[in-house]
Length: 440
Image (cartoon, rainbow, N blue to C red; front, side, top):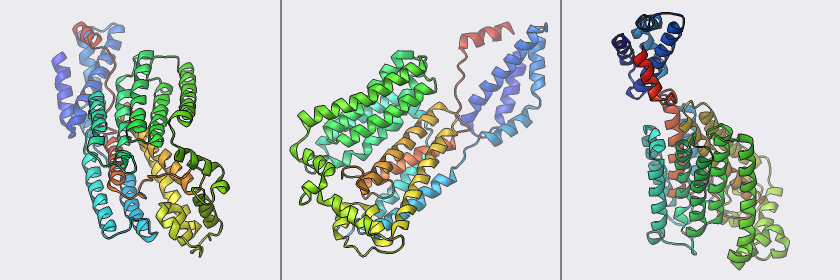
């Protein structure tokens, strides 16, 4: 009778054209048949007869397979794809029109090349089986750490900072999603191991680039991912207690590090910049000048059309949103913010729709990355946060930012592509399956 079930499953799965989905479908159908047969046995039916009846009750394997083929097939997330292409082109035009591209010939052409490379990378990753990240998360993570360690010996620093390392550091986010995926069900030990893998990229960014904002970003994004994993009961721990401890640690640790940095690590010029943000009037002839300039520009802006305010200084500052509002009115800034918000919401929508835990966490991490960097970029443009280099998606010049953002979008598209194909593996112990098969 077992052969009858195997033949049924073989016929059914042959109707499914996506090879990646066949194993999961076959295992699910097998589990369903065995569960139904066990129910018949409990009602007094003989083992062989129960299994035969369970197979018969399933119906026509060809018809079922054809129906499952319609469900379990790769799908394109056209909304996110159209946004990525349209906003990428629009962002390039905005950088050109507002004068935020670097001075000198060839900047526009170079950015076009970066954008083309990014689109090719996005298309390639779209066809990637992202479960590879979950299966080899630690190996990929170790390779990424090694690349970060050797990068200062390869890259050229600018004013003591390796800026080319900043955006690639955010590729640790999908790798951390794979780490969390591997530690599911490991209790408190799994949480502690996840914390270790969370801290390492932040320290590398802080000390090697060096970029404290990037380190804080990675800590915040990874910390939120860990909180989400605990909230969704990925670890066999007291959920509420663990969340409180993690949240308290996540608030206290950055506060202590900030105080330590202020007294022992920050250079004098960094302290002056923070002082200029808190009291720009006191530093009006120095670093506080930018805050007064931006606020005056925004105060004189119109809803439509140019403000008439001199903006040459802003063009060199990289504050694209302020430059855009000064040149074309507040409505243009609202449109850009709305477009970026739509991308963030789309990313979280893709994540929430995932049946696969790994796909969900990768999507959540990428959504959090977009949310944090866009929020920071808007806050810096409007002087809500201290002036610093911002890297908003579609609005940042350079190959690193353009390509990394396209890689992250490609991973989102890959997660959506396989959302009905890569399901979760059955947690039923194999020895239990074996006993049932012998019993039947």
